[in-house]
Image 1 (cartoon, rainbow, N blue to C red):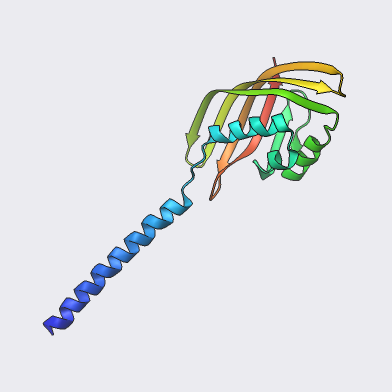
Image 2: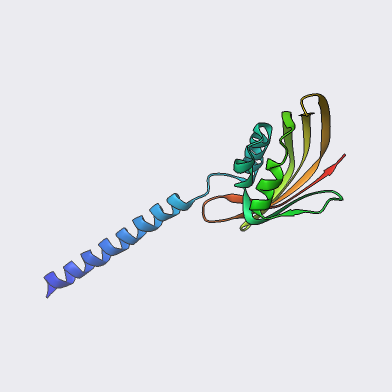
Length: 153
């Protein structure tokens, strides 16, 4: 009987150790390494390259983007279509500066300003500046933009 009791103690100890290791490994595999600020940095780079497909993937399925006094574009597919429509625009400079950010549970808000220089139809150079607010949510593996609003200075 004492031998059986010792085996039971060892089995319980092994079980607790195995569950602990699984829990630790599970947490490290699902941890989010990217911050909301990293998403804005990636957005900045992708806009400079005008990669509509990659930009659209930074948004949730039902995301919304909009500029002051214009109706919002709703949905990742619509955002992709909207961005793809700028065939005559070449972005030669794009800078997003983060002014503030806050994270609460699985949501974040990033406020900042943007400066952009574009060439329209290969001839007209236009400089634009303004402010943005990006609202994000955290899914299982990363942060996604759920709403982005911009306004000109």
